[in-house]
Image 1 (spheres, rainbow, N blue to C red):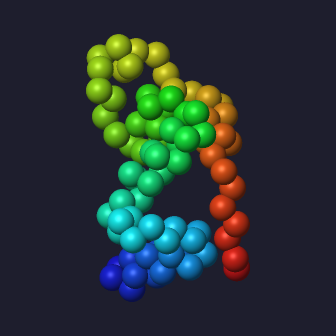
Image 2 (cartoon, one colour):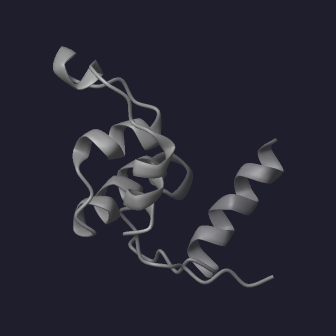
Length: 84
């Protein structure tokens, strides 16, 4: 497991080119994702659901976040090229 976590951190730095030293790859992944999502115009409610976080208000728990709506929001994110 430790080796996998280290590999993820290396991938984030080298391939995804997350070079901001304030970003600790394995700890801050969710923060980075939410920042990128906001820049892409994704509503915080969708970002919460995608990240598996509890919604902050009871009202947001009403209804469903259907997969097609989540996909629509995810497709707003910029594409990160991944080398094999």
